[in-house]
Length: 313
Image 1 (cartoon, rainbow, N blue to C red):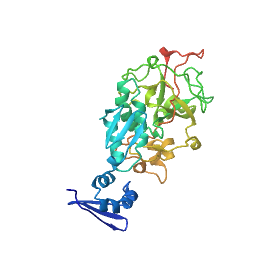
Image 2: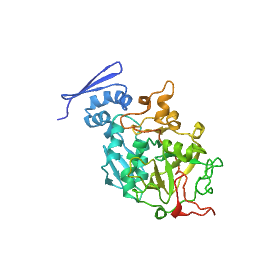
Image 3: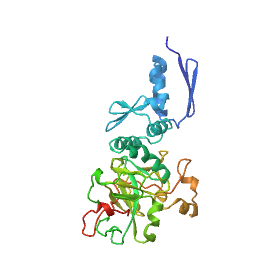
Image 4: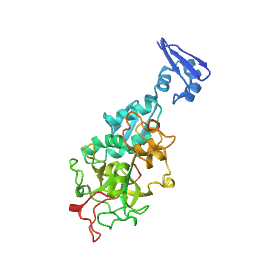
């Protein structure tokens, strides 16, 4: 026998009773409008299943992104259930009605990465170092380059706006996460890049994909990682290069000031406070995520890649 469904709408608050269970929903609930529209029919038809799905945000959402399926509160990749820190994060965001789709896209891309340590450690690195997530599931990062947009080490890699270095094979980049400096293109945090090469040169904003990350440092003090490819978006303080929203670990849009100022700099700015931008899980300076990978640091003086001498930035 199905439970009786009763409800009362008081202003923006909906009180729902399913049998002896009580639910209180206000207009902050992601399904609020749909609930108001569906309640009369659900109560009349006794459609308890539909009503419970609307009340339960996680179970009411179905979303698919290139191999990753979110359905009935479960995330799966190629029909195999996933259960890790990232899937828990997605479900948490769904439950509070925050932006979860960029994280699902990020997860889908990350699962294509052949390096298990990168899969396991990338999200934590992004959180700890303040790297933002893009709408399409990529990451933003920073580089410090010469005033002519060439890399500091070889002087041959073009990092001008819109440029990308030659894509490396994963096997060409050192995947030893215990080594801070080794073969491969390096992408850094804002703080790291600002302090690189005595703060000379230009700061650029780059975008790289989760599947292109080869080495995530195991040293928590290290402010850079190695990738096989990246794209230069432009000068890091040029707001016009950012066309789509960026998201923090809690699913909230990131303010442009967080992308161009370290945490220490933000705290010194009039009218800004760390707590305005950083939550309990947001520890360091601004996020470093962009659509394409940051510039690779492997070139010799002849314009050919010298992997044995690759140095970040």
